[in-house]
Image (tube, rainbow, N blue to C red):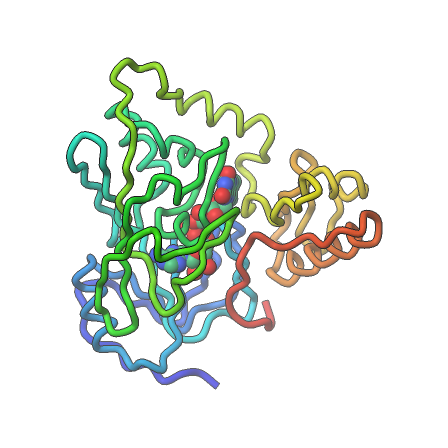
Length: 301
Ligand SMILES: Cc1cc2nc3c(=O)[nH]c(=O)nc-3n(C[C@H](O)[C@H](O)[C@H](O)COP(=O)(O)OP(=O)(O)OC[C@H]3O[C@@H](n4cnc5c(N)ncnc54)[C@H](O)[C@@H]3O)c2cc1C
């Protein structure tokens, strides 16, 4: 049964019964009952303050680390990428980015000011909010390493500032933000006056293009690397490169990537993930843990 949604007035955009396939990089998933694009942070706060508290909320950045199931998402899906996109520099070493800022944009903006610390974000196709929620990382860097504080919002629309010490984080996880969502973060960076530390974003992107299936619908690494090694290597050892279920396929270029090759459904991808997990467990006695987050309900595609 659908939730009754009485939406308050907003300066943002509300869409009803919308396909979520265009809101994630795999290009799959059913419909959202309601999608909300806040106009800005004040609009988001007012909207939450005046929305029934029993309506389920789901947050999405650029949908580059989620598997949205075919039955869609009940309640309201909040999209940060349109209204929360301010970047502000403060002092010589600090930058504040709202949750909807694209990671690549933040990387480029900081490198252009000779600031070092978040340039690894250049190749991460998500938002700052998603990077905080996942502790996204690459090339030895990770999101929380340079965060000095974050701003969060709760179900009532109250905004609060939180210190990094209030969270526990590690490889692709952050704990202690239940009931709150990130609306922005301040990063403390190093000023590279001599120009010896700033790396070329072009070089970072070229490195990724060599090993990743660029231009195909995917969600990055599907599984976390286990303690025993690289997930991609284990999947490849099991002979799963190129393995297909429905329209979904294990990438031939990078075995920890699953490609939506031919109009895959979310169910195809989920079944393929299950097959990969079963096979790796059987052959290597290792449990692969998904890095991607599952959202929504199973159901007809
Ligand atoms: C080609 C490719 C390469 C990638 N490479 C990397 C990589 O090198 N390193 C890496 O770590 N990841 C990588 N990823 C995965 C992904 O880009 C990151 O995890 C990214 O941080 C997700 O951001 P997003 O905005 O797309 O989040 P989404 O996918 O939209 O959401 C991810 C999770 O965060 C939650 N969330 C989103 N916004 C907020 C918010 N404001 N507050 C609280 N929760 C929120 C969502 O509910 C969901 O649970 C890659 C993905 C692709 C497609």
